[in-house]
Structures are given as C-alpha cells and as structure tokens.
Length: 375
Image 1 (cartoon, rainbow, N blue to C red):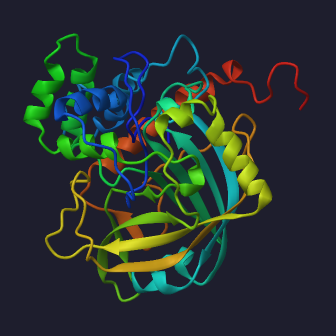
Image 2 (image 1 turned 90 degrees about the vertical axis):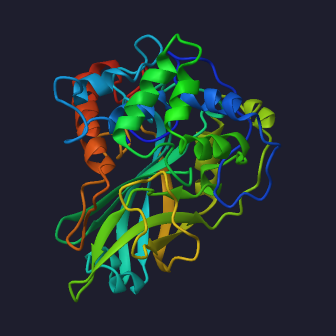
C-alpha cells in the first residue's frame, strides 16, 4: 500500500483519540459516542487515505487534481517520510504460501485457485504516512499481498480491516481530505451532512474493538472485482482473509502501554513460534448489489466460497526485506480476474505508482541497512 486506503492518523491535522479496534465480527462494543464527536475524530485519520482515491478518470478535471497533488497531501513529520510509502508507511514484511483448495475455480479460471501451494509475499501495515507512528495511535490496519503462480502470473491485493469504506466516491474522499484539513470548525459537520454514508464508518471506528496483534485481524478487499470462470461466466466478488487466531479485544489504554512498535514485535514473535493462518473467503454479489460503491457492505446472506488458506511463515524487516520494492497495486491481476465498475482500484494504482517513484528516488534517505549495521 502506497498512498491509499485507510483511515490514518494524520500528523498535520487535528489530534485524535480513539478507543477500540478492529475486526468485523465485534464480540464486545464500547458505549457509542456522540455522532459528530466520533466523526470529527475519524476525519483526522481519513485525510491521507482520501487523497489517493481522488485521482481517476471521469471524477476530476486534470487541471484540478493529479496524482502528484494527491500524493503531496500525505504529510509526515519533518522528513520522516522520505524513502517510505506515502501512506501505510509503517509496516513489516512477511513471506509464506497461499494454499488453494480448488474451490475457487467455480468462480475464476485463474491458476491461483487450482489446488496447490503458491508463494506469497506480503506486508502488515498501518494506515499512516508516518513511519514512526506509535501503533496504538493508528485506527486502521492493513495487509498488502502478492501471490505468484508458475508462468509469471501475479495476484496483488491491498486490504484493510474496516468492513466498508468511509465514503462512496473518489470525489467524496477528496472533499473529506479538504474538510479534515480545514481550519473551519464546522468543516467536518458540513462534510458529514453532505455525505451521510460516513456515519456508518464513524460508528465502526468509534466502537469496534482493538486487538493486540495483526494475526487477530480480518482483512477485507472492500472493492469489487470480476472473476470469470472456465465457462466464461462473470461473477462480481469481494474477498476477505479471516484469521485462524481468535481475536481478543484489548482496551486501547492497555495498547498504549505496550510501546511504539508492539505490533511488529508481537507478530515477529508469534510467527517465529509457528506459522500463522488466514482463511480466504470470496463473497459473490447478487444481482443489484452495489459494485461501484465500497461504502456499502453486501448483505451477510450472500454466497461465500472458501478458496484457500494464507500461511505466513516468516517475518522480515521492511528496510531490507522482500516487500520493500514492490507495490500492492490492486489492478495487477491474473487472467480470470479483472476490475469492475468500482473506480477506486484505478485511482489507487495511479497513487501507488507516484508514491513508488518518489520513494525509490529517495532511497538514500532510507538506506537498506541502518547506520552502523553491516550488510
């Protein structure tokens, strides 16, 4: 993830405090906060995530908005972002395998769904442009994933833990970015009035429990893609990775006490003790389900297909790890998959490319080996 997704703790905007996190099946909720109080808090986090979506054909005049201007919106303290992804800047690499069970072939002819094991490379991350952010200050967690199959095919995905996006369109994300950075005390109230779908996201962010591990979070594609099966039939789908590890809600105050980098430390220790697994579930839309609006979750009774298991086998530091030099561009898809009428993947792809260009040009500011370390 480069410059997209998620609700972030944006250091250049109002300070925010949130209480709990993070999976969709919420076993325990805290008392709801006043709507505008929660939404104002969430707005601060959204700003950076808004930017990447805003650039896509048909939404803005090129004179008004470009990938450069959108990536410019991601501001980390001082020069801390140099050499890093412009959003989801804090993360850690992993390697493992995707073990397909063959059931996915009912939806897509992509080789990745043929029974077998395929190399997987990924990155756990936090939705912030600040690579030095304290883990407990960032509301949204994510996973970038690349699965490779023989013949050079790849399936890349960028997923986050909320069950839906905060707003419906790239235009709305841009307006959210402007509102969250405004000095006008009524800016967010005006924004929410114009975009009522944001209230659902505010409720999630203010009440969903926090967890103490990347291993306990569910990661969701949220955007809609089209799978084509062997007969040529198309299926509109979204997918999720469901953790095999039972989530344990942790009070936010307790997470703060665990230190700045507790998530990286915890997942490294956990995987060192043994592989960690997620089940990949693909949800199939019914006719009429919204495919271009990721702020709308599909009904829970939709058909789901368990297509395989992601097995994380090793954790590696990002500085010199295998995920450093790739983007998790969601438009990189194998035959049998394609984008839908959802405009966000194209917007994200444009922002990812610009972020990649910048961070690779700044490699000297984020050397592969820390000062004093030996290659």
